[in-house]
Amino acid sequence: MKLKNIWLELKKTNWPSKKQLVQLTAYTLVLCGIIAMLMVGLDLLFFNLRDWFLNL
Image (cartoon, rainbow, N blue to C red):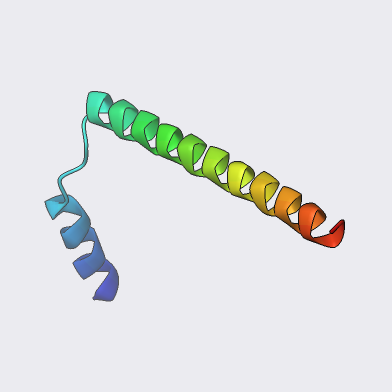
């Protein structure tokens, strides 16, 4: 009975079109790239700050 309910819910789902899927995937990859660059930048900043404080 539960599997039947799951199947009925899946049939009601509005799945994205191929175009939407490609666009959303591209947005996700761009956002992940921006976040990765931000993380690397912060990592380098804190690395340099740590070295600057240790060499005082």
